[in-house]
Length: 142
Image 1: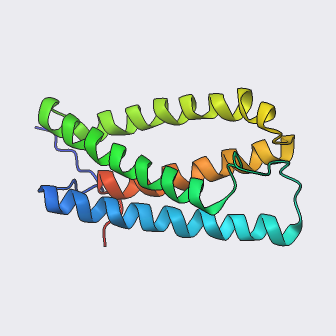
Image 2 (image 1 turned 120 degrees about the vertical axis):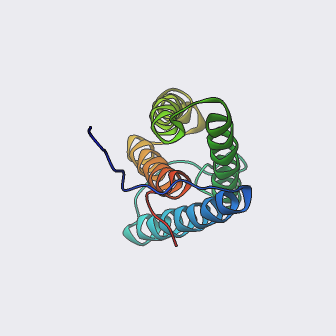
């Protein structure tokens, strides 16, 4: 008989999932806004300005919150309908992360985002994805 253990402690209730997701969203926001501050302090030319600026506070806040809500809904659905929700959630998160890089590479330049800005956007995506996946899946718990 073989036993395997996981370092992750998956959310067991809807309240637990909501709490873990909230921690993930807050962590992601802190990381992204800290990175945004560093980019501004270094004077990196991201190239975007105006109403369609993906580096403005409101679009960042909105997209991180929406990502958190969608991550929680996806995890809840996987928990309900699959035998291994944590593994499936990690796989789904990897696919979504890759898909979210497509607009960074294809749409962002048409919005005036420079190559440096594209790198910054990709870093922002990483800074959102990692804490969301870690908290929602239960790898990190507070």
